[in-house]
Image 1 (tube, rainbow, N blue to C red):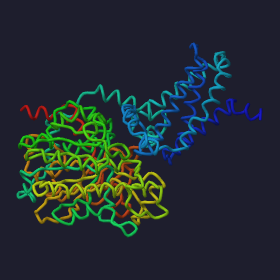
Image 2: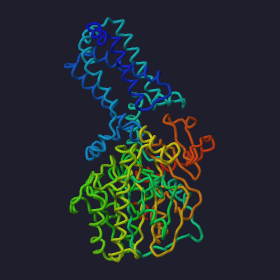
Image 3: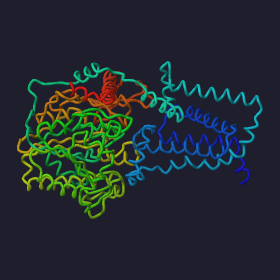
Image 4: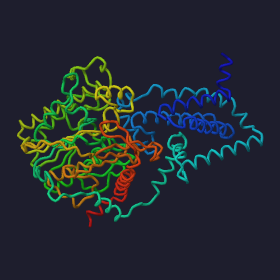
Length: 612
C-alpha cells in the first residue's frame, strides 16, 4: 500500500493522473480524432503549470496552486456539462448563464454526468505531490531551469500558433478547437478582440445583404387574411415536431394540435429552431424580430436597450395593444427589462398571477391559460398577446395525477417517456384554451400562431437517442432534434395547407406579417415569408457550429474543428449522407447572415433606419 501511495504522488504517478484526467475529459466531450496528441499537449501544459508554481517564490503558493488547479478542473467540469446539452464547450461569454442555471436547478441536476466528477479525483493527490516537490523545483540547478524555460516558451508558442493558425492548417484548427488549453485561451483572445474591434460591415453592405434575401411575389398568397384580427402567438416550451400527428402506444400524443392542423390552419412541417445560447429567450427574439441570435449570449441582455421594430411595435402602429404572458419569474432571461424595448406594453409574469397550480418551474400551462381568458376579455380589440408555455420544460416533471398517456414499460421513468407526458399535458392545456376562447366570444376574430421554441430531447444523449430512434424508426439526428412545429390557425377561413418549405424562427415575422397585413418597409429582417417562397434556408447558432444550415434538401453540420472538408451533410428525414463539397455556397451564406445579424445589433442599425 505504501508503494502504491508513493508511486501515485511521484512524478510518474502525477503524470499518469494528468493523462487519466485528460482521457476522461476528451471522452466526455466526444473527441474521436487526434486524442493521443491532445492528451500529450494537455499533459505538457499541466506539467509546466505544476513545475512553474513549484519554482516561483509566491507566498502561500501551495494554496494558490490548489485554487488554480481546482478552478481549471471546474472549467473542465463545466465543459462536459455544457457539451452534454449544447454539443459545445463553455465560453467565457457564458459566465452570465450561472444565474439562469441556478434558477432552474432541477433541469441542471438532470443533465449531470456522474463520470464528470472523476475530473476532481486527482486534486488531493496532485496537491500533496506539489507540496512534496515544490521545494525541489524551487532549488533547481541553472541548467534545468534553462531547459524548463525553453519548454515553457515552446508550449506558449504552440498555443499562440494554434490560436492564430497563420497558414490555415486543418490540423492546427483541430487542435485549437478541441485541446483544453488552446480552446479556452483562444476563446478569451477572441472575446477580447471581438469587444475591441470596430464594425466589419458598413451600413450599405448590411442593407445589400438584407435586400438580397427578400423575395417578393407579385400576388402574395394569404396576404392580409388576418388583417385587423386579434393575434395570439403561443411559444411552446421544448416542443418538437415529431410528436405532431403521431401516435404512441395507440394514443394520439397531441390530439388538440392535430385537430387545429386539420382545419383552418397552415402547418409548416420543416420548421427549425435557430436559437442562440439564450434558448427560449432567443427563440422569442428571433421570432419577433427576424434577426439571428448570437453565440455570445442572449440578446435580451446583450442588446437590451437597442431600438427594435419587430412584431409588437409593428402591430402597435396598427392600433394593437401588445403584451406578454409567462408563468415564471419576471426577471428570468432579463424579460422585465428587455420587453419594453421589444415593444410590449405590459408583461404578466408569475408574480402577477394566482399561483394556484405549480408544476415544475412555475405556474402550470392549464392554470396560466385559464387565468389568461379574463385578461383577454378585458382587452379592447385589437390585441396582440404573446404567450410562453412552461410545463413542458426539462426535466419534464409531472405528478401522476396530471399524466394521461399510457406509457410502455420500457419508457417508464425515462426522459423520453416523461417528455411525452408533459407534451400531452401542454396539448390538453391548449385544447381547453381554444374552447375557452370560443366560450368567451374571442375565437372567431383571433389568429392563433403556435411554434416550438427549441428541442426537448437531445440527440447527443445516448439513452435519449436510443429511445427516440426506436420510436421514429431511424437514427435520431439534428434534422429531427431541431425540427419544431409552426401552426398558424385562421378560424373561419377553410384553409387547410401543409407547407414543406424549410424555414425557421427567423422566418416567423415576415410570414405572420403577410397574413396580418403588416408593412415591413420600416424595419430590417433576414427571414422569408414561408407561404410565398420555394427555396427555404435557415442558419443555426447553437448545437451545430457556425456555418451549419438547413435548406429544402439537407442539413449541413459544420465540423467542430471549423474545417469545411471535415463537415457532414445528410438528407432531411432519411439520414442519407451526401457529399459536402456542393454546399460551400450555402455554408458561406449561413456565415454571412449570422455576421450581418451581429453587425445590425452592434451598430443598432434599426434605430438609424427609423430615424431616416
